[in-house]
Length: 40
Image (cartoon, rainbow, N blue to C red; front, side, top):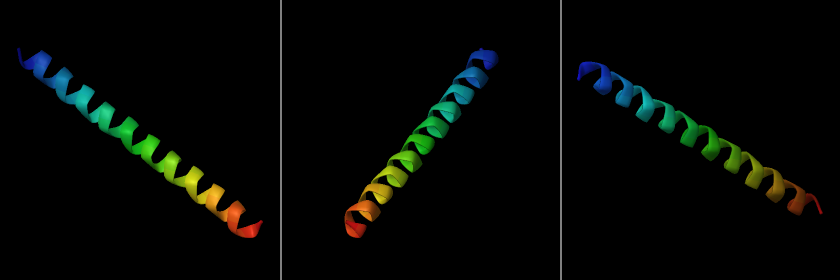
Protein backbone atom coordinates (compact mmCIF):
# COMPACT_ATOMS: atom_id res chain seq x y z
CA UNK A 1 0.00 0.00 0.00
CA UNK A 2 2.81 2.37 0.85
CA UNK A 3 4.42 1.48 -2.50
CA UNK A 4 1.28 2.55 -4.37
CA UNK A 5 1.15 5.76 -2.34
CA UNK A 6 4.76 6.57 -3.17
CA UNK A 7 4.21 5.78 -6.86
CA UNK A 8 1.07 7.92 -6.91
CA UNK A 9 2.95 10.82 -5.32
CA UNK A 10 5.73 10.44 -7.90
CA UNK A 11 3.19 10.40 -10.73
CA UNK A 12 1.52 13.59 -9.44
CA UNK A 13 4.93 15.27 -9.17
CA UNK A 14 5.75 14.19 -12.72
CA UNK A 15 2.43 15.53 -14.02
CA UNK A 16 2.99 18.87 -12.29
CA UNK A 17 6.48 19.02 -13.81
CA UNK A 18 5.11 18.35 -17.32
CA UNK A 19 2.37 20.97 -16.86
CA UNK A 20 4.97 23.50 -15.71
CA UNK A 21 7.13 22.80 -18.78
CA UNK A 22 4.14 23.13 -21.12
CA UNK A 23 3.17 26.39 -19.41
CA UNK A 24 6.67 27.84 -19.82
CA UNK A 25 6.86 26.72 -23.48
CA UNK A 26 3.48 28.27 -24.22
CA UNK A 27 4.47 31.54 -22.56
CA UNK A 28 7.75 31.61 -24.49
CA UNK A 29 5.95 30.98 -27.78
CA UNK A 30 3.39 33.71 -27.10
CA UNK A 31 6.13 36.15 -26.11
CA UNK A 32 8.04 35.33 -29.29
CA UNK A 33 4.96 35.83 -31.48
CA UNK A 34 4.14 39.09 -29.73
CA UNK A 35 7.75 40.27 -30.19
CA UNK A 36 7.66 39.49 -33.92
CA UNK A 37 4.28 41.21 -34.19
CA UNK A 38 5.64 44.34 -32.51
CA UNK A 39 8.73 44.33 -34.74
CA UNK A 40 6.58 43.99 -37.85
